[in-house]
Image (spheres, rainbow, N blue to C red):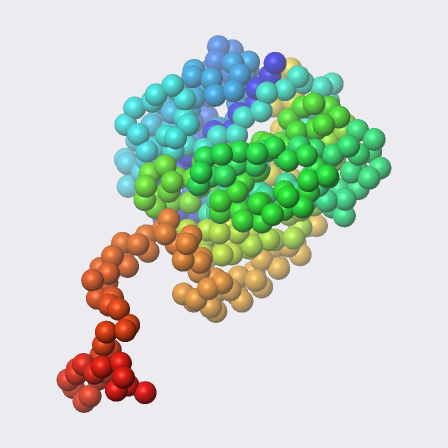
Length: 383
């Protein structure tokens, strides 16, 4: 069995939160080159915004200790690069001082899929920045559940039976498997709340194989404080009983609204961009997604093709800028700013705590201002 792993982390931003320093990319690629033939079959380094991604193939299976330990060591090396250059948030995503078997709960995000390689194995690797794992919910629903997006659901006999969606509840650490199209309304009930419920895997019922997998870690839930947005990654297999490449890319022609952007505290549209434009700057955004396409052969990564380097996504990018103009005019008001229950996982509680003792019951008395002095009047005296 072949395993394709994407393991990512923010180990220091250049400049601010906008990009990965070229030296960090060089250090990571050198490490991957040295691991080929022993640990890895193949590997490449990529990025989106300030997140470094290791895209690797190997035969060690899911959450393999050796592979995860290798990635952890690479991120320690790029953290040193960040410290040497005074980059912002050096080692930001590394929530532990020592590796402990695999990366679960340690900060770096990962999406891994184990497959029997087909004669032709086209895969798409999506890398996101300035957003959360629920950002993949709508695109995955459209790819694997919406016949208006994916006509293969109607006309391809291998897709006609539908797909299983594995949904995770990030707050209660539970999961459920929903059989679609029969349970599609149940699926939408949950994934329409992407801050809590996220699609982890999509499984083809006719092929009996995993078709897509995402990273689902929430950094704030692991750290107990805001330490940056999660910046998720996703792997989608395509063709031959799975969505065609064009069907898998089509959801991103509509720049849906996601949580993230400045201080991880705002709603903003998700912009599909080529790698050269994957450097969020305006208001730490808009949130970005890049898509790297590969043809796997004997575990080798033939590619990448920069799939969003295509003028057919120009309208989506223009729409993003128009939506961003509209949302920014709201300033600190919802719906641009996240609702209060989600702000609990940002830096807002630290500000609210300073004022906590000044809140008082409304049925005792109310302060009124008369000239330069404050007097207290009973509630009955105030009209």
